[in-house]
Length: 325
Image (cartoon, rainbow, N blue to C red; front, side):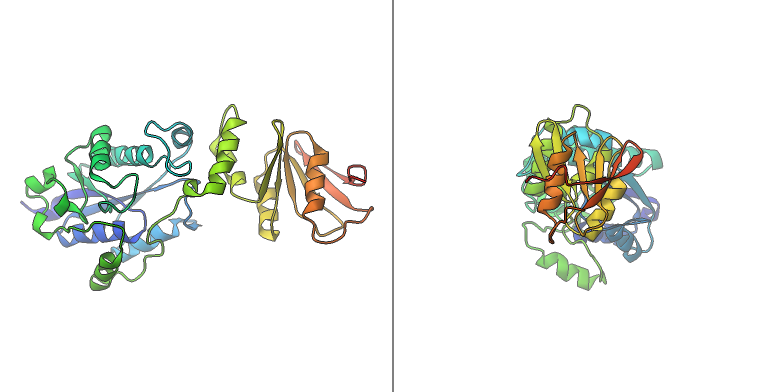
């Protein structure tokens, strides 16, 4: 069999493990097609061409074909109500993995690939990388037998491509556990020099962000992926069930709030004093201005004015009528 014609789809995160898995497949003369998933919860730095880490990994692997998939509304519903539960935060890791594998499987069928592969390492991640969970993911994705995990294959049952001789099992690895020493050594050996996101990252594992998104779900009848950007910046204050205030922490966040706030929200920006930009989701302008004054480092004069933007209209107003005497 001419292995150079065998196609496989690799889930490429841009991290070290998935890059190494792809490298192992290339060394077996398998034609690989990478698929990468992004969401508003990724902590990698995005660029115009996609996640910076993935762009780098594709170059490291010889500019392999890359399909990028943005997880949006359907993913938000999984975050809100995952079948297999959350992790320590709001991370629906098992459900997330099943969805990604299913989409990779769809791509596999579309291009006529023989199997998919991942950079998963047995026992590395607490929720998704233990044998029972790996088996669950295989079963619920509908791809049982067609998901190869090259870095830990020795510890797992042979897959269909291995049994068919499409992949040489003797050249696969038996890595397990959380240590990355073996992978780092392999990267040096195989000439992989740049892996900017060794372990990846997800905001849904962060406690503070998880608290924010729980609050968002509990006060939002129809959640939208467009709202997530505002959850990622500033200080957030739930004043009451009808009012929430977001206060920028620095100049960069002031710019982000001005760009990301919704027309239905109030945007308050200081005009003649050096204070933070504030977004009010609700009607209590007093609460919003109180927060603006609270987080203004310098004294706020009685003559202080702000620009108040709401539903496409802006006006300049004095804040003295709202200050607490």
